[in-house]
Amino acid sequence: MIVITGATGNVGRPLVELLASAGQKVRALTRDPASARLPSGVEAARTQDLPLDGATSLFLNPAVVWGGAEEMISKATDGGVRRIVLLSSAAALDDDPGNMLATRHRDLEKAIEDAGVEWVFTRPGEFDANALGWAEKLRAGEPVREPFPGSRSAPIHEKDIAAVAARALLDDDLVGTRPLLTGPETITHPDQVRMIGEAIGRPTRFEEITPEEAREEMLRLPYMRPGLVDVLLRLRAEAVDAPEEISPEVERITGRPPRAFAEWAADHADDFR
Image 1: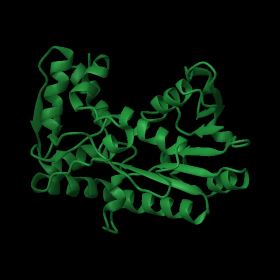
Image 2: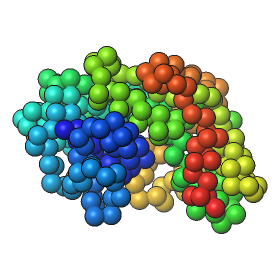
Image 3: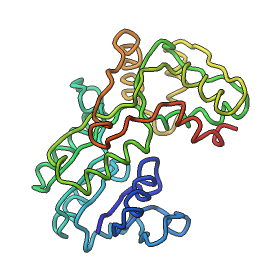
């Protein structure tokens, strides 16, 4: 039995689909199993109940344990879970003590290591799916307003993260590794906005704003905190001069090149129309 947390999320859903199509026994944890629309044969259960009985492997999305993972890790190990695959982050490579994202992911990785189970920590960088945060504005014909238009990253398609996670759950060759995952190209946010426009068949616009304006807008979001906002802006500024390097790990692990952002935009075109 493989338990997937965050089973209806950006990575969890394609991961559940991959495992189900491979004939694996899957229990998908979600806040609302009744509306999950999962593949036939997949067992749906509530995340809040932590139903880990009978599980041998666990895919852990940190979003479901951001307030503390001790209970889930303890219940998993006590219940016989032998392997935990963590959706960690490339942020864990940043040694800035003020980067709470990096600190949280490193702490979670250490807690899993200390639990004495087999582990794999997938470390994706920026998600293609982060662009869904622009959907409301682009549907309304408004510009995407952000600072540092020259900032470059190598965003990754959620299906590629899921493919790596599936290998980590099913095979033994990734145990004890921390694969860094990126997309196939370094691009800017203006590039992404343009490619979304090409996918939906109408022009889209990017508008540069100052870091100060961006900070004010970001702090209006309920999940943002001043320290986190400052770190995110710092990383964006640094990526203007030092763009993210392309990692070979997706192709090495899955046997196929990672999907380009243009493919992601085509897959999600309806979200922006």
